[in-house]
View (spheres, rainbow, N blue to C red):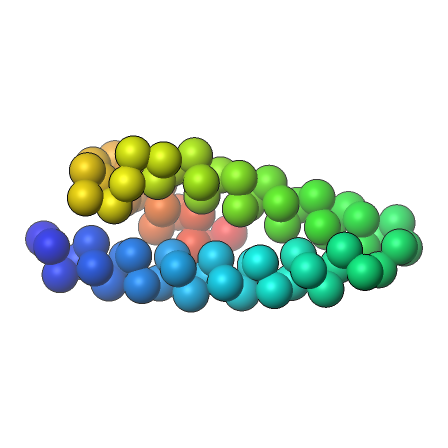
Length: 73
């Protein structure tokens, strides 16, 4: 089970870095379309922070399932 959580953590952190980079790109773009996407990316990052607020060591199966769903969107 720990291996699965480590794999999940690595996948989530990779996606987080990708979204953070995209967010920074979008901050520089003033077009309305970019603002909408920036808001969407920010919401995804906020969802992630909320899901792992208790830390990776205390990750429940329910939160792990939520994170797997988060990765799919």
